[in-house]
Amino acid sequence: MNNRGKKIVLAASTSESSEYLRSTWRQMLLGTLPSKYTRFPFYMVDANWQNEVRDDGQAVAVPNGLRVVESILLEKFAPEDVVVCYPDQLDLFVGEDTKVVGIHAHNPLGITFATDVYVNFYGRTAEPINAAEFKRLITHETIKKHKNHLKVLVGGPGSWQIEKKNLQDEWGIDCIVEGEAEDLILDLFERAVRGESLPRKVEGKSPKMEDIPTTKNRSTFGVVEITRGCGRGCQFCSIALRKGRSLPLKHILDNVRTQVAGGADTITVTTEDIFLYEQGAKFDTNVPALKKLLKSITEVDGVKHIMLTHGTISPIVRNPELLEELSPYAVDFSTHQHPASSQHDKRYASLFVGLETGSPRLFNQFMKGKAYPYKAEQWHDVVLKGMELMNKHNWFPFATFIIGLPGETEEDTKKSLDLLHALKDAKWVVMPTLFVPLEDTRMESSESAKLAKMTELQWEFFFTAWRYNIDFYRSDPAFQRRFNVGIPIYYYMMGRRLFGKQMKYPLMRLAHFPEKILSRRLYLDLRENSPMQVPETVEIPQPKARPAIPELVD
Image (cartoon, rainbow, N blue to C red):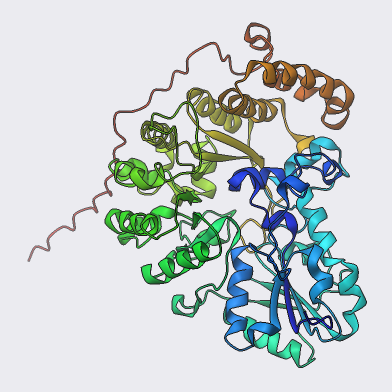
C-alpha cells in the first residue's frame, strides 16, 4: 500500500455506516443515544458490532450517497486514486499525496426529528452518538496533519446542519455540498485535485435520472434506490416539494447485483414512497410495476431478504388489493420476525409511514397532500383502515407522529390522543418526535418544539406511544419488571428537574402504573375501548360539480 496516501479519500462515520441488528430503524434509534454510553456492550463500535473492513483497509459498506459519489469519480479517476474508508482507517489512506477528503454527512449534529429529542432525556448537554461519531471523523488528527495540501468537502442530506451551527471554519471544511449533487461532484473534485479554491457552499438540483450512475460497491444495508422525490407537498419536508421520479428497472437490478457481489444478502429498497414507483396519474399506484420490481429483486442470485423504507398509508386504503400482491415478496423475504405475525416463519414487513398528527386541522394546514385522494377530515378513517389492512397482511409499520407543530392547541393534541387510543391494539412501532424546522422546507423559519415546553397532554401522547411499543416488542415479564422499576427512579433523579412535574403521570403510564389511578389525571383511560371504529370502506370524495352555465336566450 502506498503510505504516501491516495489522491481522493471518501469517508463516512462509523454510526452512519453501521448495519446494527440488520435493522434501519434500530440503527437510527441507537444513533440518538448519548455518546457517553459508548463504552457499554450494546454500542455499535463494540467488538461485537465492528463495521466490516476489506483486506486492503477500505470500508465494506458505507451510505449509498457516498457510493454514488465514488461511482462518479471512477468515471474520471483511476481506481487506485479513489478509496472509501471509515475513520479508524484514515491514517492508512490520507498522506502527502492526498488532495481531497470527501465526507458524507447524514445527521452530523443530531438536528432531526428523532435525534434532537431522545438525547435530551439524559441532560441538555448530552451529545448523541451520531454527532459524536461525525465529530470524531471531521476532526481526525490525520486530516488536520495534512490539511495544508488537501481540500475537505462535506455533502449529504444533513450537510446543512454544519452551516446552521457555524462550524464550517472550525472544522476546516472548504466546501459544503447541499442537495442532489450528481451534476456538480466531478467538477468540484477535479478543481480540488488541482488545488484550486472552492466555493464555500454549492447547492445541487435534481439531476436527470439518466445522469444518476449505478454504484460500484456495497452500500450500508444493501441500499438500492428506486425513486427520488415525492411531490405530496408536506410543508415540513423538502423532498415532498420535488416531484416523484423512478429509476429504470435495469438500473435498479444492476445495483442489486453490485450489492450481492459485495457480500450483501439483504436489499433495502430505498424511496420516499414505495407506492410512487412508476406511478400513474395523480399518485395512482402502479401495482403491476411494483410487483414486478420486488419479484425481480428476489430472483437475483444471492438475495435472501428485502427491507422496505418509506411509504404512504393512503394508497393502501385506495387499493386494498395492493398488499396482497406485494406481500409474497415484502413479507416472505423480510428480515423482521415477530410472534404476532401469521406468516409461516413469523415474518413481517416493516414500512416507515408518516402519520404525523391526529388533528384534521393541522393535517389540512401542513400536509393535506399526504391523504390524497382523501380529505383531511377523513384522516382518522384512512389511518384506521390502512392499519387494519397492513396488519392483516403482516405489515407492521414504523409510524411517526410530530408533537408541537406550529400552532398546536390542546384540542389538536386530544385529537392525536384519540387516534392513538383507537390504535391501541395495532401491530406497529409508533415513534413520537418533536417538530424541527428543517432547511429548504416551507417551515424552515418556524420555531422548534422543545421537550421542556411540552404540555401534560403532549407528554401523555409521547409516553402512551412508548407504552405501546414496550408492550408489543418487549413483552417479556422479567424485562418489564426491571423497566417499570427504573422509570420512577429516572423521574425523581432527573426527569422532574429537566422537564417539570407535567411529565410525571404520563411517565408513570410507561411504567405500567394502574390505569384506575392514572385515569384520574390523564386524558385517556386505556381500560376503555376507543369509540372510534375501523370503517368498512373509506369513500373517495367526488369533485364538486361546477355550476351549470345558463343558456343564452335570444
